[in-house]
Image (tube, rainbow, N blue to C red; front, side):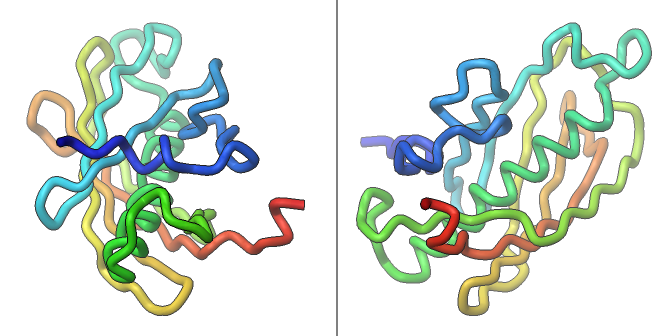
Amino acid sequence: MKLKPIQDYYPDDVAHCYGCGRLNEQGHQIKSFWEGDETVSHYKPKDYHTAIPGYVYGGLIASLVDCHGTGTAALAAYRAESREHDSLPALRFVTASLQVDYLKPTPLGVELELRGKIIELKGKKVISEITVSANGEVTAKGKVIAVQMPESFNK
């Protein structure tokens, strides 16, 4: 049986993120899964996600890297604790730092693949590297430092 994406396990009170919140109907609805030792997500930009005709707006790419990075952090934390994704307390992460390098223009009209690798998992901090590929070519890469969300965010 295939697991649901980690974002589908986020509790309702923290599932509204524009990038990955399942309760945000206008958002990107990023979905992140394990595939071996990497995380993966797929996203097809809409025509209005344009920078110049035929190419994806860089802000969208940053948003995808950001939310796949926090999803990757959650997946890594659950795996490190040998916990089921629906176990409580929920492990939810927010971005402490985001770095994105744009390597080449990313074409519109194709599905993008995001892949995440864990660089460091230490306490409540997870560092991951995320690549964005279009048609099998890496067009952007990022580094996300994610920290476990403070309980005060839920109040």
